[in-house]
Image 1 (tube, rainbow, N blue to C red):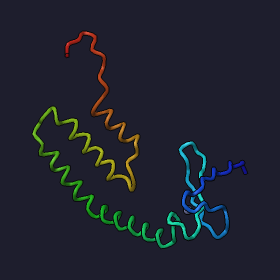
Image 2 (cartoon, helix red, strand yellow):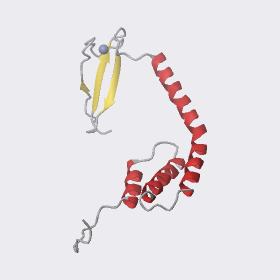
Image 3 (cartoon, rainbow, N blue to C red):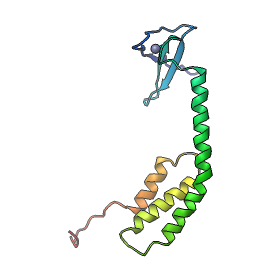
Image 4 (cartoon, rainbow, N blue to C red):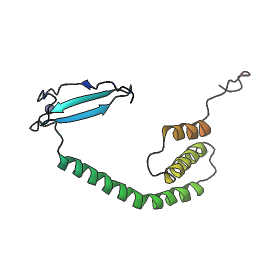
Length: 137
Ligand SMILES: [Zn+2]
């Protein structure tokens, strides 16, 4: 097995708990790929209980079910509204980009990735090309 670096320990500023079987360890993945951990005593207000975790998970499931139930109808309303838009050249890229982003979301079960946002926005709002003749100001 490859060596894994030890997590960086960050002391809790409230309980200053040390690594110990009776304490809770909360670990974080850092943006640089490393890990950070903080230990809390059971009495610490920053400690997370099993009940907190279950309440949070239940709330996420409820929000997800609510959103999944309403998304298809909201998506259809957007498509109808976009189709009924007058042929307004100024609004067209906005309507097309929003419609496409919502379409991509409809095809995923989670979040639309940043790469999809960039692909769609680059297509509908391309970078300005050099204008050697300076025909526009
Ligand atoms: Zn603590």
